[in-house]
Length: 618
Image (cartoon, rainbow, N blue to C red; front, side, top):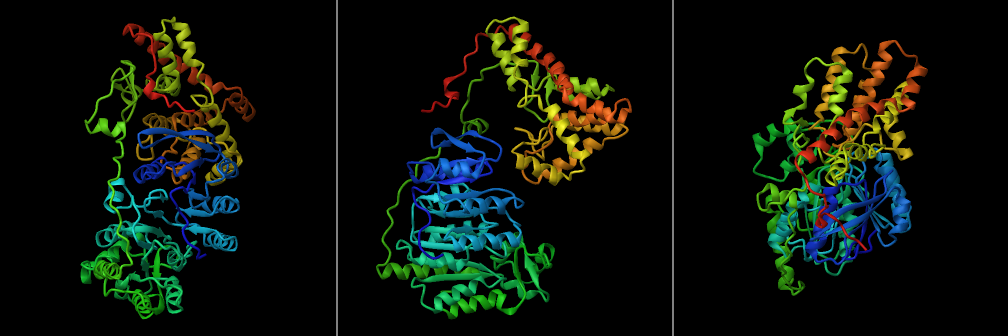
């Protein structure tokens, strides 16, 4: 690997599996550093295309979204970093495909638990093709004042405090992503700051090793000293020992290997990330650390986390070996900061450090939503609605929670009509109806305007949910087989996913429907299968919850199948002709009529959308 710098102020990346927050943090870092172009060139979201709007300083920009890795690489040939936020199940396949693209030089794999066999395969391919893999199980890396991967270095406040908006003279590499933030802060206090920092990841087989990056740092002129934070378990640190002994590294190296408390335990021990944090604080020693560790310790034989068996893999042995090879190794983690400070001060005395010109980073504009919540600004609204409100935990009709209306002994048809009648003024159908009504059009025109939005993206997923869930259940596909087969086809699972609701904030309408079915239906086999699918999709992302389309679609399958009145062929035909979607159209017509009369009663003027809500692009 060796060579030198892998990032610069012009580095651009492709981001796989859209996550709004880490991308926005990258763009905010770009603005903080004074970059002229955003570091995220494109987003890859399998099965989706278009644009995602994000902020680059004060300006809102549209970042292209591509459905395949090949298409993204072709569209952005200068983007040479691939940031992979896929789950551990698909991270290896997508990373390998990215490595095969001629434009990609660096791949960062965020997921933990990627199978060892797959990781070894990635490492082999990357090394034979002169490419770099960071991770798996990594937070990423950063070049101060130039480029950062995803959530590296945490919040903007932490980045400013650690002076990562401009380059320093220290190269830093660690196994732990969480402790990287602590070390960035420490290094900023006692030196002129980080030039580049890398977290190689906590899995047993990292795509690149501590010594890989140390040797690379040794070739970067701007880096004057190197800081290494290792962990007990494995023998990665010994390749660094050999490099020091052979004279391949001619810059000062300050190193510490955590896990010295492992000798408190008689058997082989394995530390997860939470307990690893404890190891860095020497105050938590003796009986206290022993008791806390007993609770959090994982004494097992699987391949996750830092694990020490033989003496050579102990923290003490590694620290001694590094010290004997010429690294500056303190007596404890507590003394690590002083060692770094002394090493840097010596370099400064020798005239090897060029003084860094301090700059004042620009202020990152605060997002409107957070500013409103904190009471710093007030913003006018553009629509008045008195008939429904979908902002809370559950929708309300005229201020009355939907659950109190539904919990009155209605049949399933009545409940579905009630639940689907309206979902607030912000959804596309209601919005169209409101705009049309405010244009002075009659009831029928306003109603039809809203109804015309019903389709695959709005309301029409009831039929698709019933169709796909029925097919998967009847073919005895496991949730994994069903979801992954849909993913390969580039089709999102109908009835799964919500823009607002999350795994910890479920749609109340779905919960009411499921409660009714479990109480009154003779069988809920399709609904329970959908619940199992939801459990699997929630392991991928917290917004992949069952929505009301999925709940209604599967419950009507159970109703049709459990009634004994329909043959399998008749049920298939009912689903195929769009019968279930008719229920949504019927119900939503009630809400759209309500919105029409609400606007007319309120005597609302012609609607004009505010220009500040429009992203004007060239």
